[in-house]
Image: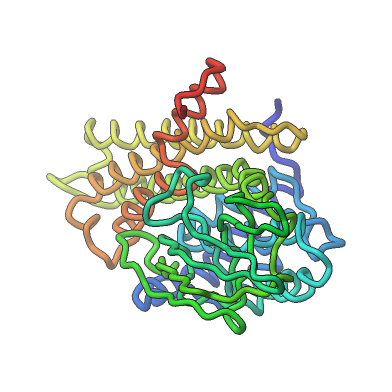
Length: 384
């Protein structure tokens, strides 16, 4: 296994970092304050492969490999975890539409998504169901030429701003022979009425975390995505991809916190000399470096295995578990190194600290990852 980057991969990383620093970093403060992502930057992000990058060129993507994609996610996390979250949501939709959508659905939804003309969400989590996707309660009743949907979704990225989204619901249809099997539905805001309001949260303030409510909402039959009753398999098929995204974003955030702390420890003077010359501060910096390097190595390993065509289920869960927790530990130490300045909303450490804590939960909490890893190692499931 060789972790050295090719010339092309190095260029991808360097160009992405330069672009994000020059074009995206100046937008972060305003986006965080108004609680809405900087949508105007999406067309430029597409040029670097952030929109549909893993899709084949024939589908409108960049045909990137998983290592190249991992590098892009690391740089997104280094710049702004809110960016990584929005990009992840966009690409979940893109992958599902590319794999399971028919030609009409690709024309109506995938093409405008890849052209950066539509904002979107993914509706999985509910008030009573987060980790247990199979237990969701949102219902889709077959009424012949349409479905009637009732239920609530919670913690939905961009829910109040989305032009469309992919909704996970249990399907009930005598004609289709379905009695509570999960299906996916394309929800177009222009044709389906539903309520959306913001759910204030402590992290990723620009991603407009929302609650969606469906009360006898009408969804056309042609908006059923893929095979009816096949929704759980469709959603689960992308979990490794999502966990790799989260892990690499966490690595980037950890590296950002480390870099800021190194510079601060060199510049900040107390008792007549830089604080970096004191043993306890050096211990913090060393711990941060070790955690960041270990998280990167585990995440690169997962990306490399996926590049080889492996499922990497175990490795992606290990990477997600370790990297997200390590990133918050690094951010915590970074705040300690920065002292009172670390609390200030005028400096990045405060945001990185909040965002890395939030990153431990999505795409499967640390507890869920632990049970998945245990099942893979022991061959026994603790879920039942």
